[in-house]
Amino acid sequence: MPLVTSKELLAKAKEEHFAIGAFNANNMEQVQAIVEVAQEERAPVILQVSQGAIRYAGLEYAAGLVKLAAASVDVPVVLHLDHGTSFEQNIQCLRAGFTSLMFDGSALPYEENVAITSRVCEIAHAVGIPVEAELGRVLQAKDASPEEVAAAMTDPEQAREFIARTGADSLAVAVGSVHAMRAQEAELDIERIEAIRARTGVPLVLHGSSGVREESIREAIAHGICKINVATYLNQAFVRGLREGLQKYPDEVDPRKFLALAKEYLKEAVREKIRLFGSAGKIGLAGWRSGPAQVRGARPRPAGAVEE
Ligand SMILES: [Zn+2]
Image 1 (cartoon, helix red, strand yellow):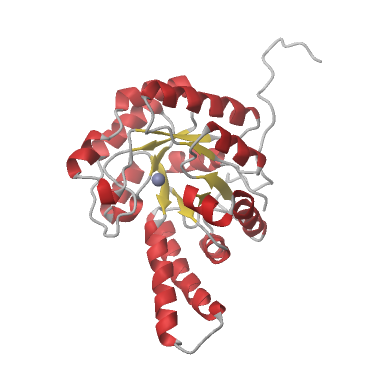
Image 2 (cartoon, rainbow, N blue to C red):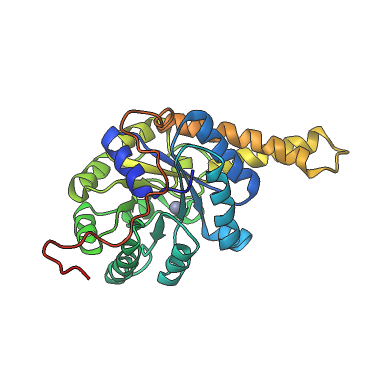
């Protein structure tokens, strides 16, 4: 089916206390693996394109791959920009057909984050596309001490004000995870998640999930996390498949042999996450809308507006 926006998927996830897997992909095999598992598991899925993926594959190429993959399945697929770096890049993604955006102004001074997020929201909302924003900072594992992670966490009261001022549709929160962690050791601050959920009312997004203990993930979902980004864990599985393939067939020169194995390993990692997040089997439930892309036009006409 055509791409859908993340708005209705996240609303459903919030209402039913599950989370949608937002999986990073960089090449054809990864895109195919993710949508194939979503189809097999009857799960809605978000495919996201990171800054690294844009540099590696190119924006149009990455978008094209995801659109083709979505058209080959009948479960809802979202094309999302991960950690959009600028106003301009977000608008370029709108034009390229993304159905979900992110502006990450978390490294900017607060007022600048508010200002740019608001501008992105105003334009994206005009064409029915939702925007994820970030407040607090999800740091990189290699350069974050426990003290720094704690200091960078999202402040619930500031989150309330931030959502009210920007109109962002979902919020990436810093609640104890860090990016690119290889071992599953981190514990999330569940009380903080609950406090942010209560004050903002929007679906919350967890970045850096690869390093979080499974029990902590389940609890976080119960308290308002509706979208969970996974990259490192998937990369590890893919590369494990490649390595094993190279060892197993030392004389093989057909790269498809290795890539097919890597894809199988990746599929199992995606399946594991989809089941952990509770999104398996969510398609086909009563009340789920599975029509064409829900990209709406202009805002509803205000009452009493003059017909043109
Ligand atoms: Zn992230």
